[in-house]
Length: 104
Image 1 (tube, one colour):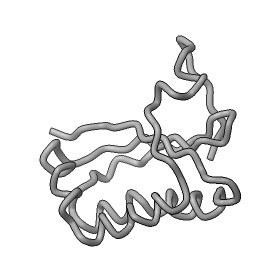
Image 2 (cartoon, one colour):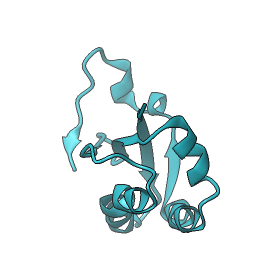
Image 3 (cartoon, one colour):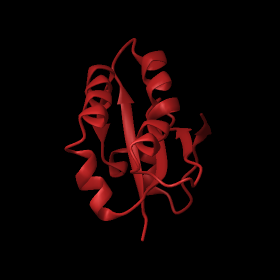
């Protein structure tokens, strides 16, 4: 059974375009490794510029496999250079019953 996750990436100053480029290919990288489903990801932006990505892993085990996959880890290292990975609760939008975001 798949696992849908919500990931939030707050860009470092001046790194917004680099982050956007990484997000555009993130799920493709996971799929190429057999870790994410074909369900289309949903990507949006919070008012403060934080990118919110919703996607589906193949399984809970796939999440753990990703942490040991050299290609995925290398891709995630690029994320760490351009953003902070934040909990969804850090976004002001998460405090609303109906959280509104801007299209990616």
